[in-house]
Length: 169
Image (cartoon, rainbow, N blue to C red):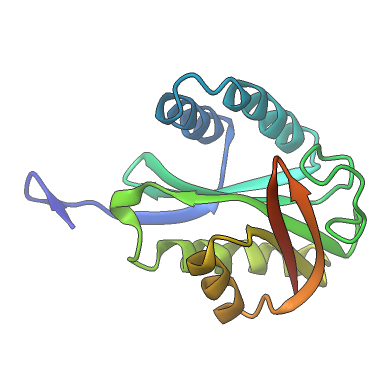
């Protein structure tokens, strides 16, 4: 990809505090009037700082354009004590996996998932879980393609049926 004659590179890495601030400020700006994003920003940054979660980002140059968070602890608000999603030692959950629409379909989320899975393996995680709204058949198909094909549980959250799938790594 070229801009002003130079090549802009894509990077996939563990987020630092600046990355977290940028990605959540963008999420807030992209969802005006939805106060949950302010709460989620604080929650995800706190979880990262205390080691209960690790967020990974896709950088386009220095601009974070995508993210995914590996929730390591059942104390994370998104897991809410559901040990089958994240037990604090061998099972972790991927949450907030997203990318800006103009970068969809280019393989960036797949590369980010590889980064997350490699990190999870390196710290002793043996199973990763991921949730998907049942109505999101495109995302479900992608997760199944990536090997997340063991139904772990299902639950209704905010009126939506969420299916949680797991993968041994």
